[in-house]
Length: 242
Image 1: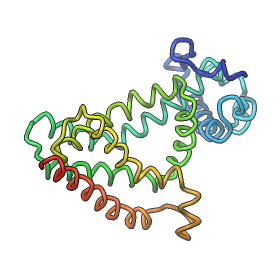
Image 2 (image 1 turned 45 degrees about the horizontal axis):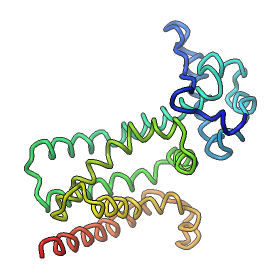
Image 3 (image 1 turned 30 degrees about the horizontal axis):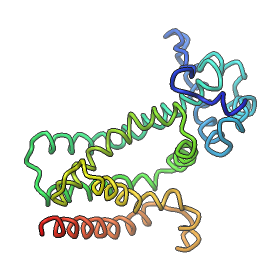
Image 4 (image 1 turned 90 degrees about the horizontal axis):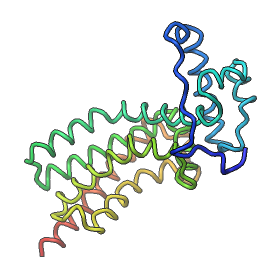
């Protein structure tokens, strides 16, 4: 499969929807196994490098099951992206609802906005301890380098929803205009403080002497980054108030 054949927004195959009766029991189990195996394969080897034959074998399925459930390799790739987006959506749904309600109410002051940013940081760091998200990170990191329709799907459902809300909170907390470039940069600088523990995981583990990033490590990381975020926002607020 050549690079040009990677999933693209207008031409990518979409997963096929089987009849309700066919999707029960073993068919559903096969579909989920294929997605789980493909998630690891695509994350480690990329779209071109991953073999559908190997994916099917590791999922204890016939290779024809990929065509049946997803319409082909591109459909399977997009189904993996759908799985990632749905998982993260579920984890951040309470936080998203809380932020949306606060912003809609119009009563968010700088201190309240700062607390909500700290809560968002806490929720994102907590994901580090969930084993499945390590495979998500490999898949998303590849997509960050060479975006396809899969990245557009994840961005539209997760990043494109949370980043604008976080940017508004950062603007309120720093007494700034959310449209300003500096606010956007500050928002990504905040995100980078917890993302480094994901994308730089190997270096973090070696330097810190950790075997893994689990609940104990999350508990250690969270207050330090929250303190850093609070200090950043307070400094920006002071600067903008002069």
